Every structure is written in structure tokens, then in C-alpha cells.
Image (cartoon, rainbow, N blue to C red; front, side, top):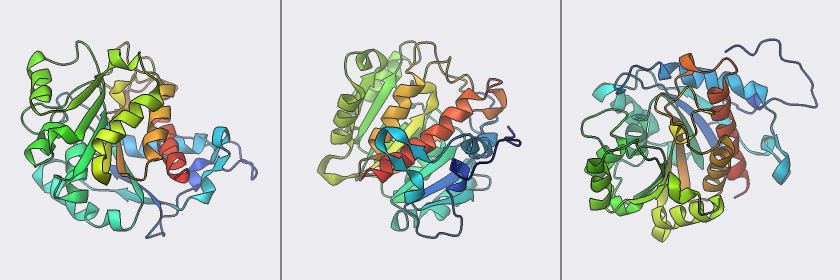
Length: 299
């Protein structure tokens, strides 16, 4: 994953230079939560936060489409939470996260597997009854138990009303009728991959934010990168042919991050150890970090 040997040009600042770890109250905070031990299938997703940070050096700080230089945004890197798996690890996530919303406008967590959606959201708010969740995912994540297949179900069990949840990108042949019924029973709004073909991304995101953020609720955004087509996310073990494009996900992340109700966002389910030779999945994750920052800059 090394980016050693990249050219140096003082007029082309690299995105990896954006983060000042000494800032205690930066508007944008990056955090690694390298959970992987409760995954339904073996994964080395704990390697991904470091790989994504490394990949940031491949990109600049400038979003030309909006004339936005991210050097105008105060940004910090909070490092990684050690051993975030199982009950003890989730307690460490909760302890670390407890005061972050008072310090930062937007916190982006790098997984790790999708189990962090539960531990991080619960750590940020503790009482999750009055937040909303927007999840980009091919899967419902409503399984029983404690795994990367259960974070949405665990949040519901912790008090999050299903009506406050919007799932975007749910794929055919990636779920069971039993879990689809569970989503319906709890009032979750499901925007399937098929439905996405008939609306623009701004339309979809506006609808999702209106539901999740009704009455001004804080919103947590879960970005499970396996919502993408397998050609652009080969390091996501459960990605499918026919998912959304990298461009669509980048656009979606910038749109959600531009809304002030969105306070936290995770990027999950990438196993850096099985990525393609060109590191396309890890590079996509790095760009999602930058899209989130660009969204924040537009508020």
C-alpha cells in the first residue's frame, strides 16, 4: 500500500497533508475503528484504516467542480481505537466517542467491518431513540446476534425506531424474505437498487434525509461500500455485480455530508488485503473521505 515515490509539488498539495492531529475542535474529524473479529466471513478489514490514510496521498485537496479547496476546512485525525471488537471493544468505542459531537461538526469513521455502525452510533449518542440513520448497503443488516450483519437490528433493539431508518441500494439476491419482512415490520424505508434506476441521486438523498432527519434529528450515515458494483469494490467480500457505480457513491456521500443534520458517517466492509492490484476499493474509500469533507465545506 506504500505511496512512497510520489512526486512533490508545492503547488499541488496532497490530501494526506490536510489533517492536523493537534486540533482538538476541528470541524472535520477522521477516526479509525478497525473491527473485524465478529465478521460473518473471515476478513482483514482491520488493515483498512491505515491503507485509506495512505491512499489519501494520491489525491489533491481541490474539488474543481465546486471551486472548493479543503485546506479551508479544519481537519484532524484522531487515530485508531484499539481492539474495538466484542463487548470490551465496544465499550472502548463508546468511551472514545462520548464527547466527539461537542467537538466536531462531522466525524468520519473508517472501518473495519460493518459492526462499527452499531458501536459508533451508540457511542456518539448513547440514547439512539431520537436520531436518524441513512444506510448505503446491499444488505439489510438485520440479522440476529452480534456481527457485521446485525448493526441495524442491534440499533433497533437499543431503541432506534425503524421509521427513522432509510436503507439505500438494497440488492436482489443479497437478502432473505425473512429479513425483508423484518424491515417492513419495523417501518424501515427501503430504496432498492432497482428503485435507484428511476430517480436521480439528489432526489433519492433529499427523500432519505427528509425521513431520517425529520424534525431536525441528528443523522448517522452508514456507507457500506459493498453497495457498489463488484468491479469497483473487489475488496468488499459481499459486493455484487450490478451495484451502484463509484461515481454514484461519491456523489451520494457529498450530498449527505452537505446537510448539517448529518453528524457522523462510517465507511465499512473493505478488506484491504484482498483489493485489486490498483487498490481501487481503498482508493475509492479515500475519495469518499474527501467527498465528505467537501460536503461539509459547502454547508
